[in-house]
Length: 154
Image 1: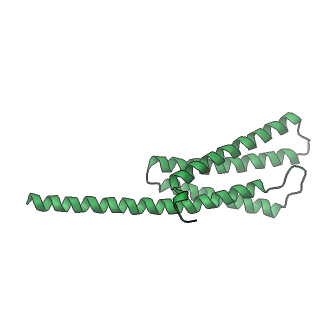
Image 2 (image 1 turned 120 degrees about the horizontal axis):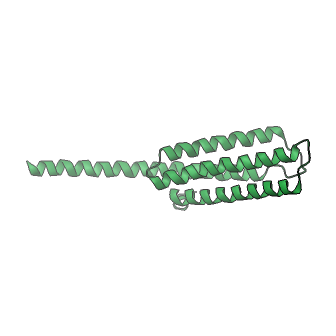
Image 3 (image 1 turned 60 degrees about the vertical axis):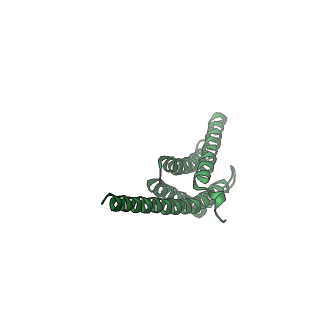
């Protein structure tokens, strides 16, 4: 009787391990796709109009929608993460992406305000945008590593 119980327990443990492995592999594949989308949106944020250039409102709306779509994908990725490290890397990427988009929008509004901004205000906005960009780059690097993007075929 104990032998049968041991065999059943071993089978259950093996199946649980296989299921966990499949789940983690699926998460990594989803993370790799989401990472690629986040990198694309990151470059779209960089391609927005520079100071003094006119910005197409349609392009700005498209970028804003893409940012929110990718951030929502990162939120879902965090919710379905196989462990705390994966959850944290996806959540940090979502927060950092939204933070950079917010900093860019704040800087744009400052520059387009009816009253010309001071040099200190512009410098602070630029510093904030650069800091948020650095945070996003670090968060994306952590997600890339956690998702083993280099191990995948792209």
